[in-house]
Each structure stands twice: as structure tokens, then as C-alpha cells.
Length: 230
Image 1 (cartoon, rainbow, N blue to C red):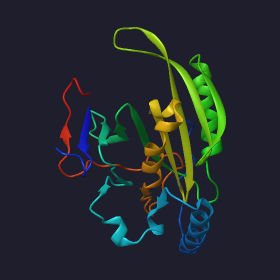
Image 2 (image 1 turned 120 degrees about the vertical axis):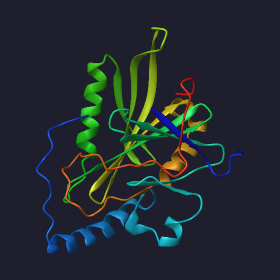
Image 3 (image 1 turned 180 degrees about the vertical axis):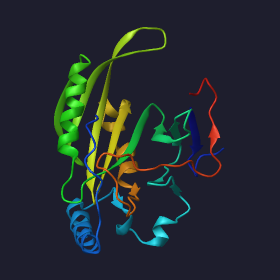
Image 4 (image 1 turned 30 degrees about the vertical axis):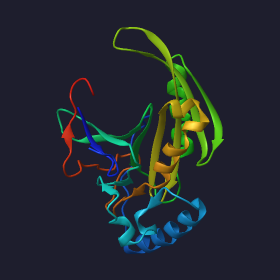
């Protein structure tokens, strides 16, 4: 099931989870120090919630989806991939014309990022599916370009190209997949990249197993899309 919400300016890879982190008072202090260093090293968004002030976080153009707070761009639609049985939001999809950006957030260990490991697993899965995966340097660091065979509703097989971007933050990993024209034409990529830079990740302080999905939720006023739109 897909839910959608239009932007304000518009008119109308898995491995066994490691043991959950046990955070002590000393570790909390260490986390704060590491958070500051990580934010400085990134130099730009996406941001951890500790790196933005409250006024910015509560701006009218921000959409609070729980673990992720996003900023809509003019003409951009927000679609949420929802599990029909559990009702849990599994991923966020930002759609602009014939391009899209899928966002998923995961818990990560306190001591190190996991994107390099996850990246290898995604590449191996693409190869297993009969596709290709190549690493390239992008505006957010090392990313993957995947070309994999997919089947359309009519049963026709075609190749789909996507860019998979990973951002290691303070105890979280944000995985972004660029789809459609923005994945193959550089001129179409800037809006998707801007939307990614504006994301704020709200990890929370509770212990979580690395790779566990951060909880997303429906925004106020979300409406189910029709079957044709889905």
C-alpha cells in the first residue's frame, strides 16, 4: 500500500543482527562527542537531529515521519511504502516528475559506520540477480550504480539503473536509492540530491541492534493512493 502527500508548494542486504547495544551513562557522553565529530566530518546534510536547531526542525516545510524529517520541494510528492499486514512504514519515496528518491534508515554501531559493509552486500545481491554493480565517487562519498533486470506488469524484462547512496551518521545509516531519469542523467539529479541533503535523521537513544530499521510513521493528513497510482 502506498500513501502520498504532496509538497507544500504544490497546488492541490541482510545479515544476522549483532547484539543490541547496552548504553551506559559513560557511553552516552562518548556518543555525544562522536556525534559532533561525525557531523563536522560530513560537512553537509543529511543531518543528525542534534545538528539542527529546533526552529529549523519545526519549519512549515518540514514533514515529520518519525525517524526521518524531510523537506518537500515544489512539485514533489511524498509516497510511503506501507506493509499492508502490519501497517508499518517501510520506506519513503520522494517523486518528482520521472525521478524518485527512496529513503530507508537503520541503526548502526556506536564505534563505526556500516556503509562499506552494506555496500558490498548490495553489490553481491545485484550480481546474484544477473545484474552489475560498480562503485563510483559521488557528492555523498562512495556510492553504487546498479543495473539489474526487472520485470514489468506485462511480463517484459528490462534493465533498471539506480544509484545507491549510503550516509554513515552517529549510530545510524541512511540509505538512499535514486531511481528513474535522475539515476542516468546528471542534469536531473540535483533535486534528488538536494532533497537528500535536507533530510534530518532522528535515531533516538534506545538500544537497537545494528541494521535494525528505524521506525517511520505516517504524517498527518496522509491519504491512500488509488490502485492506478500505486
